Length: 187
Image (tube, rainbow, N blue to C red):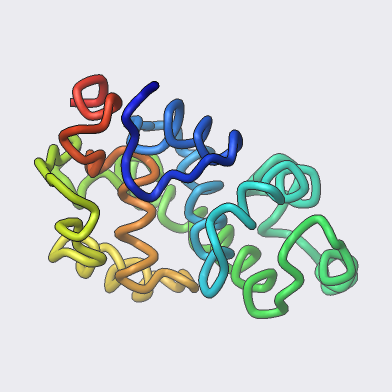
């Protein structure tokens, strides 16, 4: 039996996400955008809810093609708000479109969205040494800085708590507890 982080329950989808994706460093800009949108969509909901809807999100939002999303019309947005395969929250759907537009502006200024987002941890993962879930913070100085800068650039649903969860998800920080079998793998 594999020892996992305390937050992982017996759900196979959740375990697969924890084992194969959570905390694995990614430098792929499109994936980083997808995860930023999904973390924002999760606000007020469980992460498992979002994982179950993830394929629906990918289909509904054109595979997270930023250029396409940035040009969505009101008609397309209204159609998305009727789609049961995503979280049908008007603010969150509209934020996805405006975040795509802000993303394109970031890419004009920086070499890539990846370069921009990874600057908050100096380009390499922060490896923590938490013994228990209760030791893991919900915000850090880095997530505060990321949140502040993203908001300044027009991004929505990017509060510091969302940013820290995002940093954990995309491997900017390794927050697997030291007793988790994934900790050493991602170290």
